[in-house]
Structure formats: structure tokens, C-alpha cells
Length: 605
Image 1 (cartoon, rainbow, N blue to C red):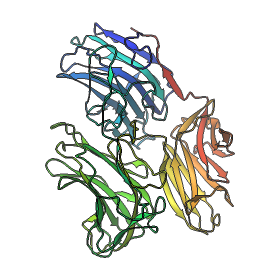
Image 2 (tube, helix red, strand yellow; image 1 turned 60 degrees about the vertical axis):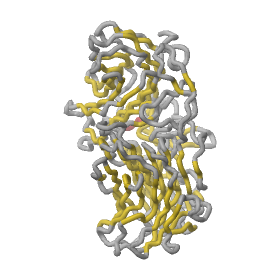
Image 3 (cartoon, rainbow, N blue to C red; image 1 turned 30 degrees about the vertical axis):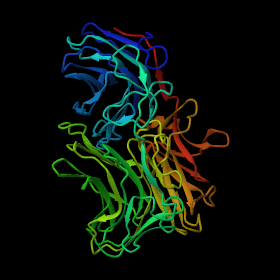
């Protein structure tokens, strides 16, 4: 531990590699974790490595088996990192290599086992300096856990690798995103603009990093919630004799939305010209099909992203039999389109987010497109050769390929575009905003403390209403009895992780809240109780552990959690409870540590 290796605070971990012997720190505190997150700072410090030399700097173990690892290498003159996880058949799944500079960086890993045998939904995400890289998904690893980790040159050291590098500010968690240390430097991200004006380190290879101010583009490009009552905030609009307009009837957030009346096959849309040859472009908007009439198989595009005069990004909307669906598409440098699966949406408001990225260089083939629907990330499109593409214009509406069998009206609202960070649901009505340099100061990756809407429905008076969703592995089902309300209402299930946990408990899955509102006004009490069933089987190994599980509600008045009386079915690993008001809830298990922080443990040789 030296002051010269400090990347955060006054001391850091200095490791000198003068042989091929592994040197690392070990943490045994993880307790058969189903999900494990770790963040640490790392500085290559100009360590000498022959081109092609590579070794591992982080291991996660399940028993005596490595199931998670982070690899560090030098390729020609550049340093690189990649993340890897193993499935139940001992086959490794490996990310692309991501280039880092010879300077301090903070690295975060989010490993998750599959929720059940055959679910094949295990995953690993890597962030470098707050920027999420292409995730590894669809992994069959339900038998794996994390119960030990090692940090340092843990394995695979080559004779051509000699010198010293630095680590600092290690932290591990079960659930929530960790991000940078608030007192630490803002490292220089790789191949991505920085939405900040905070100091960033230079690439000067010395043991104590030097920081110089850097100007960077603002994160927010444009936002408009149509609260002006017109379309004037946009660069231009194609309204087709008034078929496209702002109206109160179209409001999905705030008081106004954009109404698109489709009475012919003419395209109607608004255009934003503010994107400036963007290498990465994110957009979020709300969309409600509003029971629009479409013949089965009819499909058209509701969002375009342009590179010059060429469409390079698009979102398609269709009706298949009686259901509405969306899919995302991006084009490569050879003008071949890569297309996602179709994803079903209900005939109700949804918020949709797109994250388009060009490939970092010719031959890198790491362009991508990720789609979220109501805060749920769908399977991303990856490994795309699109390094010549940029985004410099966007269009929203019924932009192209309308069919004669499609007639009616649908709604859009709360559009926002950014260069870097996840947008998520709108928190309030928006007025038109053109980004200024000081708009946002710190990158926030896809997992934040902003509530994420998992499912929603419209409640009709006189009928039972059900709502269900998956909250980080918890399977939630809520029943609102008939005659609970006497006018139409919105019924929403959100995920949120922004509250402290009770002492002596660990969180199973994620915290969730049920919201019921009439015309935007929340209902704080119900005439009949709401029945909630929660299946927690993804987190419990045997029925005996069910006695340690409780459902608790957040008491805002006392800033504490309160146990909710519930019936537990240990065989089905389900608890059922009745609540008299929509509220924030969570499932906790007794006596499991929730967070581990390690800064200066003992070095093992």
C-alpha cells in the first residue's frame, strides 16, 4: 500500500510484477451470491508487456471453480480489457476486447446466474469509466454462484510482462450499480464522448496521475414533451394538412402529446436536426397504439435515424393477428440490415428507448443497437460493421411504409435524445430543451435509482385487474378487485432500488412499487385491499429458508421498513399479502450481508 499508487484518496494498492507468480487479494465474504457486482479502479501505469501478453486481474469463484474473470492484455501498443463468464457446461463466453488508455480507469462488473434450469438468462455486463460495453447474455449458468473473489494479477502472467500497476477503491454489492467514487477522479473513457466538464486524467505515464480540464459535448441533445401545445420545438415537421399535431388528447406525460392521424398512406413526422455526426445516439419516447386499426401483417416505421441521406437506424411497428409488436433495426457499412426479434406490446402507453452505437474502427465490428421497452432491455444487436455511419438527423411519427389497411390515430410523447447515458422513464412533463454544455455532469449507466416501469395496464371500473412482472428475479402478481375504483385508472408496477435496507436483512431481487392513479392523480387509499403474490424461488435453495423471508413496506413517515403480514407457501416458495394502499415493497431474507467494501486487505503471494 503506497501513496504513489493512490487513485482515490491517499493510498492505493501497488503490485510489482517481477516474475510469473500470481499476486492478489482474496475476499471470502460473498455468500453463494446469485448476483454479484464489483467496482475497482485500475491504472496500467505503463507496465511493460510484449504484444499479445495477457493475464487475468479479477476472478470470481463458485466453490473452487472460476466462473467470472476479467482479462488484461497489450495488443501492439495499446492496453485492453475483456470480460468472461462460464456456463454450466464449462464453456466460456467472452466479450470483445475494449481499449483503455495508460491512465486510471474505474471498472465495474455485474454478474448474474440464470434464474432457473433452462431459463438461459444468465449474464455479465462490463462498464469502463461508467460506459456500459456490449453485454454477454443468454447464458445457461443456473448452477453457478459467487462465493470468493480475487483482485490483482491472479493468473496467466507472461515472462514478457514486467513492471508495476495500481488498484484502488474496491467495492462489491449484491444488486445496485456502484459507479465512481464521489471523491475520485473522472477517468478518461475509451472511444466515447464524455458528458462532463469535470477534470479528467492525462495520459502521462507517471505513478501519480495528473489531471487537466477537458471540454466535451453535453449529454442531452434535445428534449420535447410537446408542452408548448405545438410542434415548433422541432427542426421541421411534415403534418399532411394537420394530421400531425400536439393535443391534450394525446398526452401520455404532462398535459400535451403528439397525435398522428393516419387517414392515408402519406408519411407524417417531426424532424430533429440537432444530432451532430454522433458516434453514439440514444433516444427515448412514449408511444401508445391507441387501438389503431391495422390489418394483420401491416407494418411501418415510427422512428428513423439518418446518416446524411441514409437511414441507419429504424424502429418498426406492426400488427400480427390481434397483437401489436415492435422491432429495432440497424444497417452495416455494406447496407445490410440487422433486425431484432419482434417484441409484443399491449394496447396502452409504453416508453421505448434506443441506444445506437457505431463500430469504433474499421474491422472492429463492434457496432450495436439496444432496445428497451418499459425499462426492460431486449436482446441487443451486436457485432455490427458500421464504423462509417453517424447519426445527424432523427424523425419521429409515421415516417415510412404505411399500408392501406392501417387507419386511425396513435400518440407519442416525452421525446428525449442523448449522446451517452441511459434516459429511462420521464419523471415530469417536459418543455422543449436544447442541450447546453452544463446540462449533465456525470455519466449514469443503464442501471440507475430512477424507477423503471416493468408493466402497466388500464383499470376498468367493475372488473378485476391483474398486473404481473419480473423484478430482478422476483415474480410479482397483483390483483385489484372489481369495484375498488369507480372510474378508469392506470395501474403500474415499477422497480426501484433507492432506499436503504433494514439492519440484519438482505434484499431478494429488487424493490418494487405499485402505483394506481386516476387522471394522473395517485390514489393513496383503496376501498378494497390489493392482493400481492410474490414468488421468490430464484433465491431460496430449500423450503426451510422460507421462514426467514418477509415482505416489507416502506414507511415514508418514519423513514423505515415495516413487515407486512403475509401467508407463506414454502413448497411453492411464494408469499401472499393484502395491502390497503399502493406502496413501495420489498422481499428480505434475514442475516445475509448485503454489501462488502475492501480497500486495503492483506496481499497474498
